[in-house]
Image (cartoon, rainbow, N blue to C red; front, top):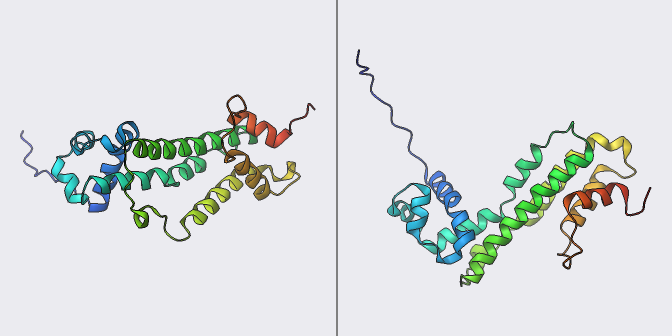
Amino acid sequence: MTDTTPRRRAPAMSVEQRRAMIVAAALPLVAEHGANVTTSQIARAAGVGEGTIFRAFADKDEVLQACMTEAMNPDHALRELASIPLDEPLAARLVQAAEALRAHLERMGTVAAALYASGHHHDRAAARRPAPGAREASARATLEAVTELIEPDRAALRLEPRQVAAAFLGLLFARPLPAGAELTPTDLVDILLHGTRHP
């Protein structure tokens, strides 16, 4: 028997959803090719026609700027932190947190470096500047997320979980160290929790 039930069309994407989908597809290409990526490549990666890109963005430069903004967005890293199980040992939780935050920094650095190296130096200062208070809000959210990871071990710590979180982030986000002096996430957590002296 033939099914004559009319098929429902998938709901149309909003402009914001379409922009987000295009940026997600474009980010790996921008990290690889920088400003030399073409809208044709982005359209293929997103599975849309090239005209769809220009209905969502004014031009390629706006796509590139949206990619940089997304690379700087800490939401993905915060979701990663929130997904770390609190019943794991503290050291394991903090190693996972360090890996998630470093991955965020690396993605941001890769996209920025690729754009700069390929000549994307347009002075769109207003577009590139974070919204007022955005950096502070991001730093606060990251500190709170790491504090929550440490909170279950409050009784075993000499400092408040928030202070330990601040020390952790200070070590993690310190300026890049010279070659041969880098700390792995495991090294960093071991120093944070046990210092540098033998027991």
